Amino acid sequence: MDHRSAVLALVAALAVTAPAAAKAAGACPGPKASAGTTVHGPVLQIPDDGVICVALGQSPSTWTQVRLPRPAPARSTLMAAAFAKNVSCVIGLDGAGSCLIEGEPLSAALQRAKTLQASMTWR
Image 1 (tube, rainbow, N blue to C red):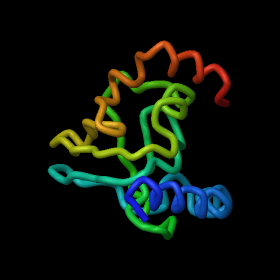
Image 2: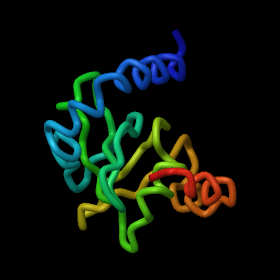
Image 3: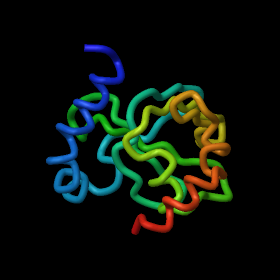
């Protein structure tokens, strides 16, 4: 199984149990990402504007919180740009993550017309 197929399988498997587990545990049930670290994995929850949860493993307890730099993008725009996609975030000294979504800077993905249009359908 190639890497993309493995990630999609993980997303599909967690989609069934993720909402209940995440609600029970609160936003991003795993630890917050620490300054100076790099976090890799699929984005499986976006609890608020400017916050993504990156799955580091199959259990929701491994979903780590990454706070994005201000001004925070709207949750709906983040959902359209990042949900269920692979992310790589370098956590700065201020605790905010500088992220690539499937190899593209998150800031560029957030500004695409296609993303903005799709964001209108997310709640």
